[in-house]
Length: 102
Image (cartoon, rainbow, N blue to C red):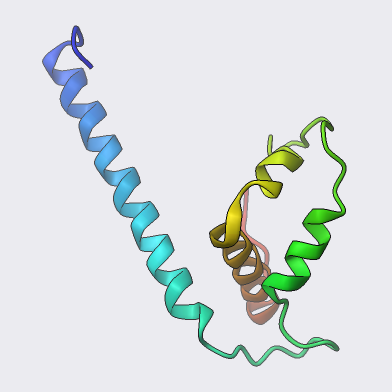
């Protein structure tokens, strides 16, 4: 950040701090809800991290990303935290009955 004007340096620092806080808050929510049992009316019950993992393992590598610009490799190498986030995301969509806006 050296060489940046002071105003831009402060703005960049502020944005970085806000992004870190948002990420930490998201991780905290995922950790808290991971242990909760969701009462979802799906035939097989709630979507588990094992189910998400099995689906991700079946994805082909080196394919072009979709409109979200997420490549299959991002999902494959995302680790356990990403699996929890994805399962929580889809379980929340199912529980609320509404998908997020773009």
